[in-house]
Image (cartoon, rainbow, N blue to C red; front, side):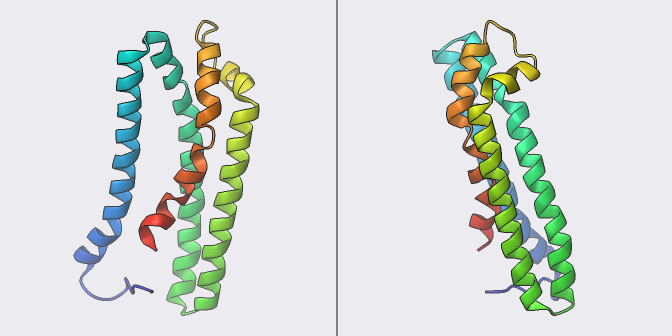
Length: 154
């Protein structure tokens, strides 16, 4: 189903387009806050510091995926405006594939290279083992993040 956002009142269209994005970000923030509260309260300060070290890597992945989506949005909207639905479909599928490939590659790097990446981020030696143990199982996070816009829009 295609929704034409080039005609009609802009406010309802913009609100309906924005709600899924805001909800996705709220869910991400809620997850991060709950994670920090639980770890800080039940595991300890070192574990909380270790959890905090994952943030720069996840932010890098999220920003890269957002960049892919923003760039693709320009291409898709140009093709849509020209009425070329075949090109729109091709660009959307290419974007989904590129986002998935990046997410999987980034996840694999985070799992395999957790220790060197965290050393590069200058994680203190006393929390490095805890940070590596946290980073490895959370490494597969970017694929879900990359798929989030697709879940809400279609």
